[in-house]
Image 1 (cartoon, rainbow, N blue to C red):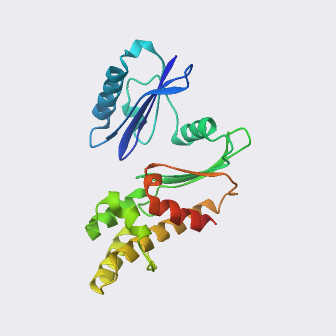
Image 2 (image 1 turned 90 degrees about the vertical axis):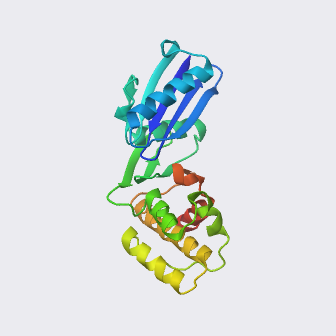
Image 3 (image 1 turned 30 degrees about the vertical axis):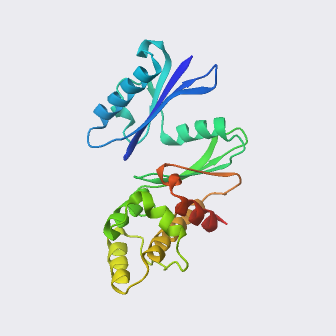
Amino acid sequence: MIQCGIDVGSVNTKLVLFDREARAVRCQMVEPTGLKPRETAERVFQSCLAEAGLTAAKLGGVVATGYARHAAGFARASVTEIRAAAAGIRHWHPRCRTVVDIGGQDSKVIALDEHGRVREFVMNDRCAAGTGNFLAVLARALGVPLERFGEMALESRRPVPISSLCVVMAESEILSLVAADTPVADIIAGLHEALARRVANLAARLEVRPEVVFTGGVAQNPGMVQALAQALG
């Protein structure tokens, strides 16, 4: 039985075709969501079906999640990102008790019980502070490709404290630091540490128990992985 899961996020749309009997991924695809999430979701769905040599009728189920999950009109069901994250973690990391998820639009900390079910969660979605968008905007301000941002953070020898988590104020602050000839890698490391502290403060509202799993698009950033590990202790 082939199951389809699609996550229509604010930045990227991700789709997986999973063979439950073989416990193997038949197809996986990631594409920028763009300004037309419905068209993106449909294109990714059809592309993955074609790659796997399947038709929609052959699928055992199609479930959508993500910020724009309702754009996936072909889905037979939809679930919240919280529930989807818990289900995925329960499958791949059954010993996990805390999930930290940082995406482009929001950040979440989810506490799981011994059975992998959601005990409680907290979210930050009121502004860009505490989200991947914080790093993306400031990467553009510094003229650094976002793909290099995390690597450059690891090159820093003396991270510069960033006092503001408001994107507008932080941008002004980093431009002043650049004007003062502060090494760019030190500024970038400071931004990562500021974001990590914000997420750690969010996590402090819950009981953070090991094992902790970091998910979301920002989890691909090695500088953020290190900064978050240090902030969470």
